[in-house]
Length: 613
Image 1 (tube, one colour):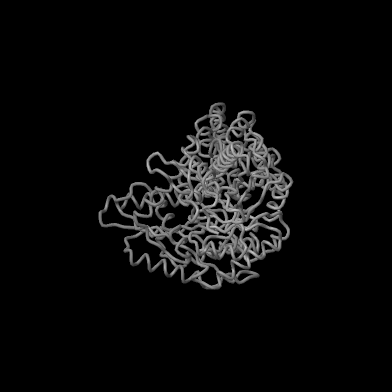
Image 2 (cartoon, rainbow, N blue to C red):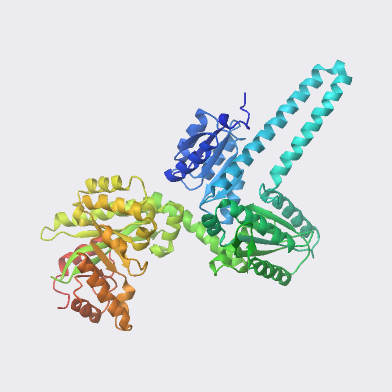
């Protein structure tokens, strides 16, 4: 017997997310509402949990290490026993192409991270209500058929009852249709209804050559700030006010829809010109600059708008929304509070990123990465004291690809975690090999850490395992982190760094001086080395204040008992000045470019007295 979906105690919700914090927050939220909650930390665990007991609803993360949310959803939808379970996607990916794919594989809804708890509850309630209405409708239909069969001889009496039940069914269908096609907060059409109307517009332009239409995709730029500072109730009030504002700017035949969060879409469902549409976008942007007077607050907001002029070159409504979303993100990247008209080059850029992500996933599987090493020279004895390990991607078609082209995508997709683990193990292995073959002076290895690596629950265990496997003395490992990683998660970073300090692993602050002005963390964290960013070194002579800044950094580090590494040393003049400022460690092209492990081994043997005194 299917549990009654309006009784929350009998409702089982499965949350699938590889981030423990998200699992904890969502579980606590839903359990307070009386739901029964199960958790899964990966796609494989989720499929096993569904096989053990069918949930009433699934909250599914997209980016997971073993199996992404798209694949999990496809597997469930292909199974008749699980095909009807509503699936709400949760993801930090906010690109239109990702949303389109989520709905294509069978997702019932899509919530963008960081999620708002009230919105999550509203979406969960909505999907459960939809499911309840569907089951109730099926139940009534079955009852109706049964009664028609057994009460054929009592047509007059049964007819009255039948009419009443038909009326109830119609009311439920009307309610279901309303819920399925409209946003619960604003009452506006939702994505599904918008796509239906967009398809009708496409059909019209394919039939009538001179017909056109346009789509405007709007995202509020400061909405998260309002939610975070004033609360979600105020955020909901603001969304309703924005909906009224936009509606007042449109013609009766135009369609305004809310896609969720702070995203709205407008279908200008009539023949128009690009000039007219851009004027409409300008009016919208101007209207949104006027403060919204809510019940208790006066709120300012702006928006970014992507524009697509629809014509017969389009064949699918999803493609139009994809391009409008792409143009909107280009507007946001251009400084927010702007509108941008889509052009094919934008789509090509998105496709290049998608291809790069695909190649990057293959590169992780096939281990296409290599490390180059740049020496760090101790000016006190002109000896190489260590190397910084620098990641390179040996692309099968493009050759060497530098981190600047792929690290951001690796961070966004979570691939930085396995990549970073490989880098750490490979660098430690190489340093251990050098130290076994060179007994006079140990070589240290410096490895960069990303924020996601540091946030891994088992990060310390990974480091211990790698050091054990490679037999590298922990005091010869130096982990480099940026100021932003420390400031953004100060307490968590402090706990991790203290554990690393107990293992005698050195901590370096990379690119010091380019991030935050606050130096308070230097006093409270176990930091061994400051690395001065190359721009300060390279402009010491062209900008007098930069030379003074370098001197202050060196003095600050020495006062606090830290070493200093000057990066980007390229000239003898720079080196002489750094000697004068008592900088003990240097790194840069003056000594060597980053080289492979074999060439680095030769440098260890050759670079002794070649540094000028």
